[in-house]
Amino acid sequence: MKNKIHKKAYVVAVDMGYGHQRAAEPLRDIATAPEFMGGGEGYIINANKYAGIPNSDTRKWEGGRKVYERISRMKHLPIVGEWVFGILNYIQRIEPFYPKRDLSGSTLQLKQIYKWIRKGWGKDLIEKLNKKPLPFIATFFTPAFFAEEHGYKGEIYCICTDTDISRAWAPLEPAKTKIKYLAPNRRVKERLQEYGVPAKQIFVTGFPLPKENIGGKSLKILKQSIASRIANLDPEKKYRKKYRKTIEQFLGAEYCDESCIVEHPLTITFAVGGAGAQRELGVEILTSLRDYIDKGKIRLNLVAGTHNDVYLYYQKHIKKLGLLKKQNGHVNVLYANNKWEYFTAFNQLLLTTDLLWTKPSELSFYTGLGIPIIMAPPIGAQEDYNRAWLDSVGGGVDQLDPKFANEWLFDWLKSGWLAEAAMEGFLDAPRNGAYHVEEVVLKGKRSEIEDLHLL
Image (spheres, helix red, strand yellow):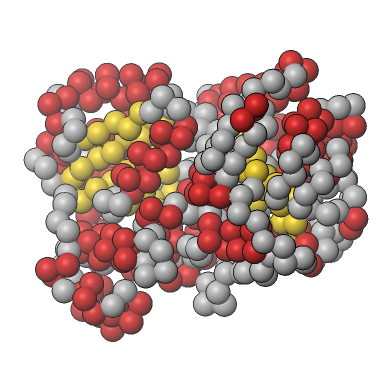
């Protein structure tokens, strides 16, 4: 790998759901884009929405996005929803990892993508960026394929955004690819090798997490959040008494001191997916925990993201339960006009979040911030694998019946189990992905996650 030093890169996401843009957002420090594309310093390019994108390209992107969102919202419908989603899930399936074998053969999905690319899909984007080639970082496989097929003159990188990935992430001829993959964990590296990508083209960097939740090499912000979080998750001090030396070793003795703890009510953040799926679950949680919210013992953040319909849906039920006056206090609805505003607000919310309740999407990696995750049912094959990974690192646990969260949640708190999950996520899941990505892309280093991270 050449050790050419760069200051900036083109960070290229896609505006589909949240996952691919969420992976790009922590890289704003190094991102740039040509002014004629409506960009500049800190600007992240959306491959499916940029100034001057050809109508033919837009139609291809929009067709896929609308189908995915419609099917995701249909999944909860009896019989029909499961049947339709099953077809989509089969197309996006991830084959069992074992036995280890050659999985480099192409799929119909991948052949169709390349057929469109070779007819010109994505060529406009690459021609524009080729006027001043910089490192090209894609957070979705299709733009990376655009760059390779249309002769991009700079280095091409692709960030994988789940704990295991389908064959679609590797190119048509993987053994010959120039794409360098930035894998969030070791399993993804091994999977890419099964798909035929050479090991020298893969860097295990971890998923890019928000820097504002970490606080640099000292981890000052992160450690402060975890110390306060553990106090809320371990009200009877069972975990802290048993594992005080572990906390002192990895957080520091000062974070075991009661005076260091920033007091706040037990705070649960429930986040819907990018397609607005599982909004009903948020209302079930709200209803079950209503009395605790009313008394100020629990603060519930309902994350509507950029979905105004989800925001209105939550507002209606908050009013119906007589909790409207508690807004901006014990129950909050997070809504933003665009995804970049949403990510900023969400990251701020996480600083005082004790429990993150969500489906095992790309947010699974956020257990690396020492946040235990209560897992809602997965949607899609990749989320099944994310769920298994979260369970393996000990940072997540499957939800029980949400109607009775007012019972089982407090049993979990009394046991200290959730405090243990917070520490296990912090210790065993990578957290410095954004920094490793920058070192690989800008400095040409083979910067990878530490050996102490297990998976």
